[in-house]
Length: 327
Image (cartoon, rainbow, N blue to C red):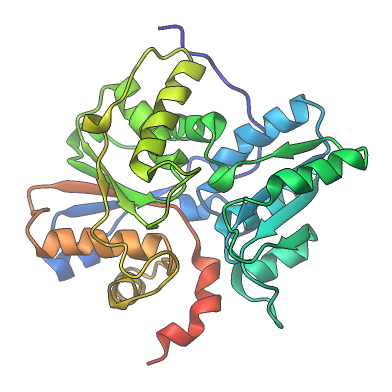
């Protein structure tokens, strides 16, 4: 296979470190647990979207674009990192955020405002439904807009996690891993990890913990991930095809839906903070870690396993959920 090599801009600090969660493992009586700290990528307090944006924004600049536009929830980690990257690269930035403007910005939204993007409040439309009309208006003003898809989940965004797995290979002996577990939400990270695992011929079980009940582009989320993995494979000439048999998307932990914090998320965040001094976020990594904890307690993960948890970041949103963590 003649795998295409893609270029990127320098946005973060890599490789991100790997730590062992020995105290958490002892408390749970579970397997050895490692954590890949993509919350430490550096861009605007870090997160996995830095990887995606490095490739996506290289493409935007190469195409002569002067403006970027993307969308997300009001506490979107992706939008926060996009605004920061745009500021760093001196690109005009437009964020299309779900909900209404609050009286006082907090968490990710507070950080967004510091980078001074143009924020468009979109009510129920948190996945970019309003982007086409805004893009058209920007083009009419003589700007050259570049649309970054929801969560950065394009072929370029997914490819960044093929690149991330190659990074992982330089850090640890991955043949000893039994499972790699992560939060799966917009699909790009999941698709990229699937492709990277296939290219590297790895045998560990890749488990995405589903974060959201909704669909992506009116396609069921599981099918969206498979489609994106296949498109990314074609994009880089990998000649690998995926089907539902290749996807593990665990939807047991979506609770009341996206951004609704329940007891499992609160417990996971508390356990990580108390025993490891590491912060998870309420929406993504808190839910994914809650899933990992439940899999240990239910016996699906045992002391004979060795698990890597991919920390995708998001801790700034903790401040916006302060009322959920009152003792």
